[in-house]
Image (tube, rainbow, N blue to C red):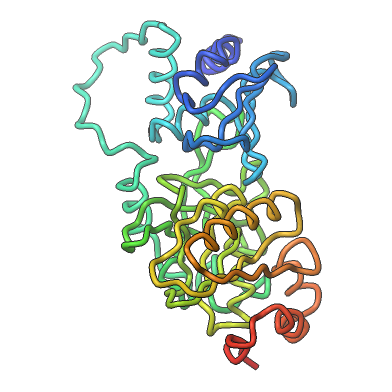
Length: 343
């Protein structure tokens, strides 16, 4: 049976390089891939879009993977993120325009309403954040506590949305799912974007979907500021990772940059004297720490790198408990700041 949606997706895949040049112009072609920093079109080499391949399957043309965040999807996802279009019919219309196809004529079509602000902009992020609720007592609280994290309900940067729209790769419509919402803010405290983690119906883990997390808005240089900074800062990748550190050292300000690529690019606040970089135990985390360390050292900020025993600090917390994690960190925290480790 003919499906107009499948036909558009197939046509986009056949013109994958054209789509990438239009919507991810900061990237470039290398062999069979278009390579760029991320879905926000920042320069870099984290996101790979396959330009050639079969019409369907894991190696199909038009499929992308972001090595830093684990996000993956198709060309419609790229168009949605770059344009901010949230309604699927409007997304198909945008794809048709790019392909040079005529729009379908609907009988007795109503006069279109005034367009809303695009779905991927800071304004759209602000609307979604405003529609969310505090974490305490919600499924987001249940999710965080299932990972050994008890402080999320006290943080204004984190919220809960019971019906946050989600669409997986290959789906033709979005479905509402509960989600943990995190505000991405700039140095002035202005909301620039959001991070969404979709949750299982009972909150005991992430939703059983292919794409469990997505970010929207302007991320580069900004962060999820879990606690206010002073002259000391601890910054790392994931929200759960940084909340794990808050559990055992609440006296140190903590930010989550959301990915290794964004960790290396986070903008440091004025007046910062000492910086702790909490890495994940993988090559990308090491490279991000080296990049951020070099930038911090150039402006006279003293840097220490915090390394987990396992994959990340939430793995450590869940496997070994608070006291063991606290002892592990004590040897890595500078003498001036050890009093901030809470007993």
